[in-house]
Length: 370
Image 1 (spheres, rainbow, N blue to C red):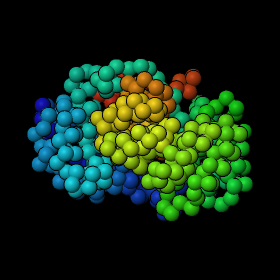
Image 2: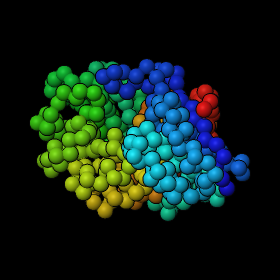
Image 3: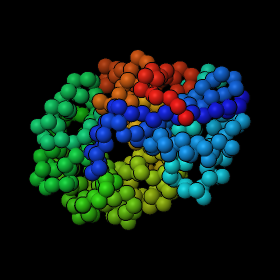
Image 4: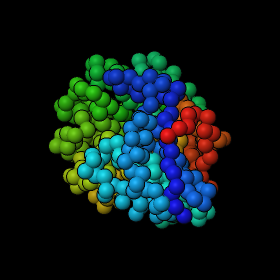
């Protein structure tokens, strides 16, 4: 089997708010679908966390390397793409584009063998995974309404992030968390994401340490991105002192970038994004490296239905990964898959059983072109 063409399409018209200082608009493109076509009629699908114009440019650079390659060997082919382009900016646009290609090749391998990706990754430890509903923080009263609505959909785990948290006052921060805990109930998992990878994050280590102690009073399951994403030294200090687990790593790409953070135990929970880091092949290596260093692997999933499907398969094949992020209210999650996603009575998502990623796309959201 050979790759004959790779096409991409940016997702627009439904881009959700991100809570960023330079807020996203519905027509902004931050997620791009990637389709890998083969000479045997099998098409694989992936997703890249970057603008479609950047993906198209990267595909132009990569085309001589992937044309005619065998998509049934995703790890080797992806490593070939990385190795021959790292000097153009390892970890940037090209790495994000390779992420989508790699996911699509695993999808092809599964379709060709009749097996779900999770089984091809070595075997499935679980057949279903708990999704945590990922919501933007709002003013406390509005946040409570949103959480109650999502809880009514069957979710049993919730993460609130960004918005006004850490940007106004400590009193407002605590009020937000208190209202959220009351809304979701004492039995639910509640996580807090400061969003310190936002532009010009205003807070420092002392704020993070003080806030971690406050979060412990509300039984917060983890504190995510409490410091700027390059501040390795302070992350190590914070993790050692914090009464709640510290999570992060969503902006890092490729295993080489994760290595010093994992060796230093900067995180209790590491959160690589499969649509950024290099795809399923690379994320699996990061997951293994995390386990070897005593760090829990729970993927970052603020992306698309294809990213969610890949995360479910990775979680199924990872011994200690029992949670995935579910971006609530995004058409790129809810409307991109035929039949949608359905929680079971326990608030769990089944891992797709079909060949490859095991999902079919509606394609209505994609405006195709290369």
